[in-house]
Length: 393
Image (cartoon, rainbow, N blue to C red; front, side, top):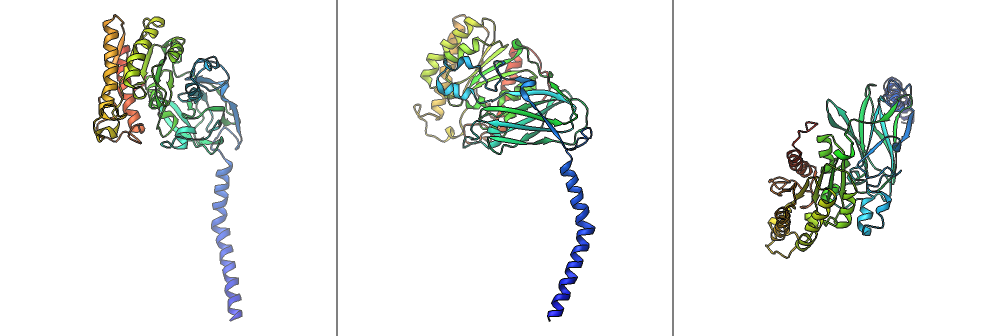
């Protein structure tokens, strides 16, 4: 029996050895080669060279300071702390660059590495890459966050023709450093496909829905969707839970060049807040921007409002939302009656659709809901500006 066991052991070793030599060897060699290659035929190797993103075109922020906050530091002491803190989230901020690299990687650092309960870490803390292809912006891939410091490839195996890209930064976290990785021998320059003339950009002031809650990834907040469709820069002043038509934010809007202002604060504002703040904000903006179109957007109908017993004092009920929207409409009509011009209004209607499948939690839109909001708001913008979409979605 002992001899038999020894014989079986020897045979097993010989058979396994033959298998490893014949099959596993090429398998290991093939995958080792893949690991060593970043798919870049012009790289001549696996090395990636990282470049500081501040060397390129940083869009979606209101300053040229060496940081990725949406607002410049001078507003820190003019805003309430909650709004200032949210402004340090990099929602809508993106890096525009062009390169002939066959691979692109990203290395980035966030302040907190946290996410709201209704969002994934990718949506809150990740990065999104888009390419300008065939006259439109097309999604390429995402950088998956792994901690406060994250690094990884986003795309490899491309050809070496010159391409233009946009890398969207985290939506619900502050970004302190961004590095773009390309093949060692590739070249990289600032991008210019997106229209960034200050007087041609669109400014959005709103709530968590505007900021990007609860998008699955950073490029899916609805102002950024509109930005890509119209191929123009947007400024996203969405402040989660803090969009209340505040005059302190109005000061910032007055200090910013734009061709259209979208006010989407209704979901965060009580009817009384709307009655007091909206007329004041409209007059403030008209004084500093006499000819800039202003679009007021109603609150969406929260999904659970269809089931809550109608009580006009209960936040989120259908009757309460009706009061919010009625207060907004009244403020709009009174402003027009008082001679203020170039004001526009968008009813909530089917902003997130009518199939009741457009939200993550009954309030915050899913990607489906965000696409629907973007389509409705974009259609209104195009009508107001009497222009066609630069980029066909």
